[in-house]
Image (cartoon, rainbow, N blue to C red; front, top):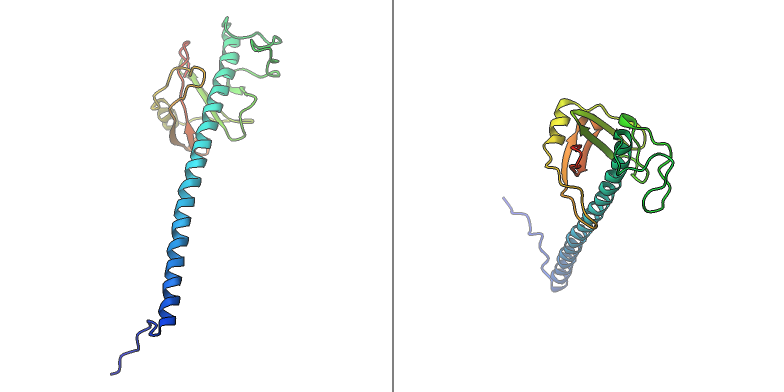
Amino acid sequence: MRRPAPVLPRTLRGRLIAGLVALLAIACATVGVVTYFSVEGSLSNELGNQLQTATSLANSCLDSQLGTADGDDHAHPAGQSGGDGSAPPAAQPQGPDLYCDGLGNGTFLAYVKDGQWHARLIPASTVTLTAADERTLLGIRPSPPPRQNGKVPTTTADLPSAGGEFALTALKDPDGAI
């Protein structure tokens, strides 16, 4: 029985071409790996920044809406401008129908106060949380409201009743709402 001939090139030209092809493959793989980790890090940082901004917007919005509903002195009554001179949000319903301007579509917004849960996917879809989702959300350790440029810890959780996995933050308000 005869053995098949080796596939390796025997000439100097063949060995040089094989070496260049191998070197090119290694260079392409290196560039690909470095690019992947660079883009992944950049996108993760951007998502984190967007989540911090959304947390601040949602906290301000909920403070305003829930404060108005509870008669809180810190909230601005409907029809008056905010403390920064901005106009108040346009006729935003209270409670389970809440809406916050500035939050992107698909943003999950939920709060619990006195055992009552209210949850939405922005812009207009009410979410009925399952008991498992409520336990998941309550399992996130809430932070105090952030001071200016303060970071709030984030976590990722799967909320099937809201439609999937979300990057989440949790804040505890002085009035007891989370």
